[in-house]
Amino acid sequence: MTLITDHKNDIEWASRDEALELESYISQVVKSLGHPEALVTDESYVSDFLCIVDEQEANLELSKACLELGMTFDKKELVISVARRLKDEKTNSL
Image (tube, rainbow, N blue to C red; front, side, top):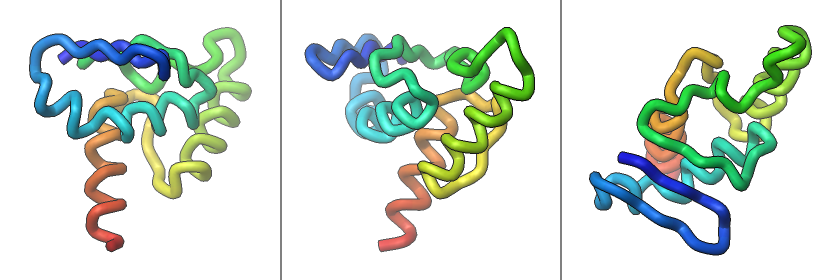
């Protein structure tokens, strides 16, 4: 699955069903990381959206994103995996 999200025109390739199902959750994840305009693919890691110059700043960004989403995740996780868990957590909390 490859998904481009720019909040104006969303384009999905391949696995359209999963992209549509997770689209809002993927958007929430990248928005929490400070990149609502981000290009997200099935190979995008959380670390791709964190500060690469300063490890301490990257950890702070990650902590803020976890707090915003109300769940913990690691910078080594795939964005789509975080989006799946976010969806599951929100679905289970209803």
